[in-house]
Image 1 (tube, rainbow, N blue to C red):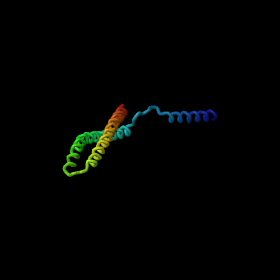
Image 2 (cartoon, helix red, strand yellow):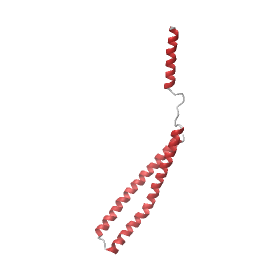
Image 3 (tube, rainbow, N blue to C red):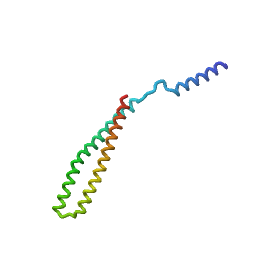
Length: 119
């Protein structure tokens, strides 16, 4: 009887140890991989859209800088207002360039995510 109780205690310990340490470590499961790929594609599309917007902005920024002084001459807008608008556009241009730098960093992050998902 004593032997049977000791054996059952060891059996309980062995079962507890077996459940505590999984036999096979899974890096990325199928569901996590599926969601990861879905979100990676979404993030990549959004980042691409931001870069397209940036390219459009470069063209529009130049047009704004040319059009405002010409329009001001035609309608008699004060030079002070024109200067303010051009200064504002210059500041906005700097902010958009920061956005582009951030977007490039986002692309690098998406690339890292892609590598992790396809290991």
